[in-house]
Length: 150
Image (cartoon, rainbow, N blue to C red; front, side, top):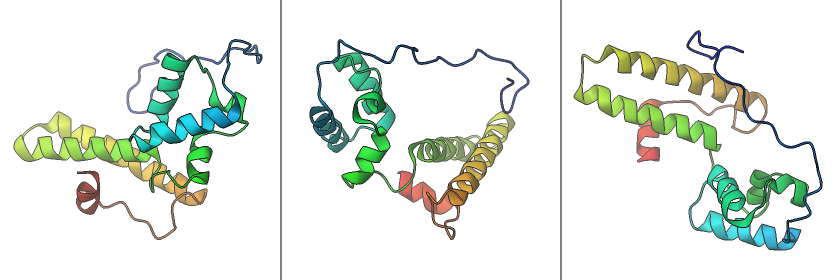
């Protein structure tokens, strides 16, 4: 499958192993939930928590043990952020590019990158509004969100 904004093919993503039994995991569901809450209170994002659990605790998949996703656990404990993580990272990228363009007014490549990033944000916002993650009256405004990110 081709990439979104370039005509390059790229490599396919990784796949989870087919074998569903992970006998080496010695953590129970309650311990894992407490660990996730502790890491979230330290300020880690959900993807960073997943990577940390994989690398330091040998837990390949939270959903396999808890029977629910990591973000669902964070929502139940009222620790989840207001905006989804992927949308927030795109907004941060947009703010960084905008700062760069403010300093380097003739950088047309950066301007193109800003346009592509903003279009990704708008597409993602439309998806989240359709699925009820964001309220229907939520609007993407780069000036106001710049204060939110900083």
